[in-house]
Length: 119
Image (spheres, rainbow, N blue to C red):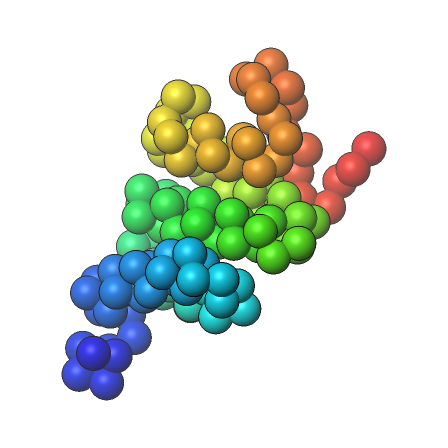
């Protein structure tokens, strides 16, 4: 599919998203992470960072990273995208809530620290 349609085609990216979730469920965390990261990069290029599909794959990638024991990477990614999700989708959208959960932020009154600032 990628050879025919190209790596950034919406169908290629959708198939990659499905594959990443299947790999996660089957226990292939390394394959799931690689696949989800490729889809995330492709969706940023094709759709931009504020698109719901881009934010959705970010949630998937953060979940995969956390499941793989890469909690720090998952939190950094979620912190980077959470403000975008809050602005683009709203505070109560399921993707915003998933990112909050990864960050350990349980309510809107808890400030989200920018990436790299743990003061």
